[in-house]
Length: 230
Image (cartoon, rainbow, N blue to C red; front, side, top):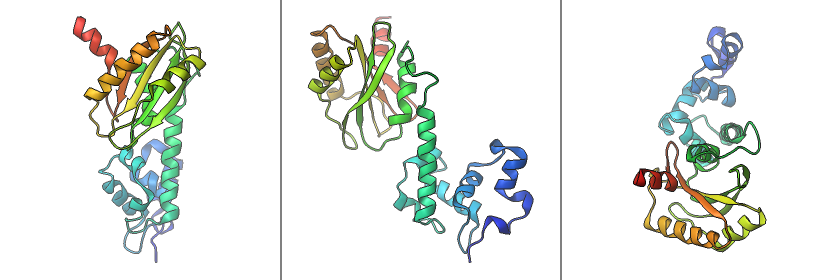
């Protein structure tokens, strides 16, 4: 028989603890325990949640990337519980991607990276996005252009130029991710950056930056240029 939250002493129950002390008083395992509600025959919900976190190396960002099948490898985690955790991670991702206002001014690469990281920072495959800017560097919109594999996505130059024209952009920022965790650009990244810059310049559209994003870091081509000539 599964050990449930109801079997615990009242002061140890995550829900009661949340009500009495607030969400911030709970550990990550206790918060997950509220989602899964019960454990297995040998472990209660908190212990089961700890086992799930251990499978993710104790990192919530890794948990958010984990497949449902892998979650279900933990004793006490079935399909319904794994789906609940996955749904909660997706809600957190969407909340992080919400902006205080719809059209911020992109003053530097750090702002652009902050906006894009929730969407692509934790992906296990590469995606290529464009951020469309007006003359004042205010964001007009952003759009995923291509989706690739684990270590490569083909940057469709013609599509990028076409979408930039349709958005009436004065400038664009190219953004893609490296699932490997290494943000350094490859030779191909540099070649495609230069190809896009030249194609856009023919139409008087500026390539303001190319940013490569990982979970906790990013690489900016424009920052590289500033550093080189500083």
